[in-house]
Image 1 (cartoon, one colour):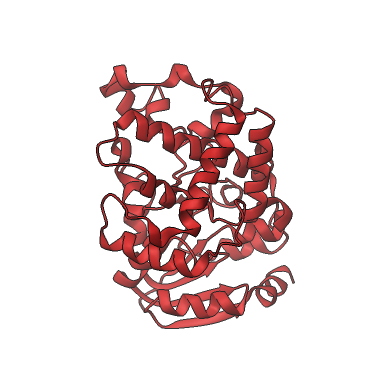
Image 2: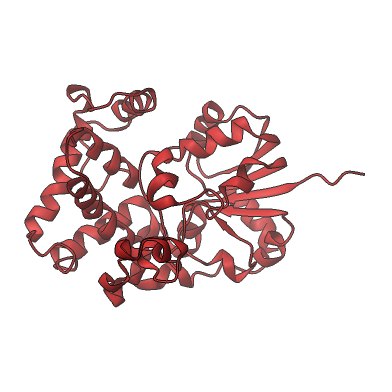
Length: 314
């Protein structure tokens, strides 16, 4: 009989469960980041930018997001219009700078950039968001030290393919074939890796000597942006490097664990276009359960996360 594939996709919910919401929720990450900025932690990256200016950059984007209907993006394509509708529903004037979803800061940035802005300017703006954010997620490396409890090892070994959108390498302790769809902290981005094919082909573009050693994680191939097509087209990143080619060709059943339905629309789109025959969604809140039904068009089954973890750990 033909083997039916079993696949799993894991998101940040697992780190919130085992590392605590006070450390790894969106809000906790942003609070840690703003704290770090105020302490001048990122001055080595932005020497010509004061701490106040760095915070001000986030505040400006926050103001755009809570007032989004009054802004027009420079290139209003469909995906962006859809996102604007979501933003309008999600953020009201009462939302503070640490209530904004990480990826939405990049969306807000799109509204502030102009088509004719030079590439260097765009890159600098992107770095001003991504470097502090990735560093705050990394949490001095503590994010790589989480233990997913007894029973998890056995559970995770039962799948044909394991994918994650997390940047940490906790799952890699259980298996050596984890596909990090959005990259991970322990692999340098091409342009920062002197040994990469990219750096060998374009030695003049290699930036390995710019690395500040204690921040090596922010030079990783971790991708953080709002717009998924951009996630793979920079610097000749290929879908193969991120396991996206395998993800697109899945069949059988896909279990989704710890993934919020509020971002990563590109992942749900791929699932809908794939040959996956059914999806099991392990949900945290009734709200996310309702929300995922509008995102995934495959046959869905649900399991509450508490129930799931109790089963795994016994």
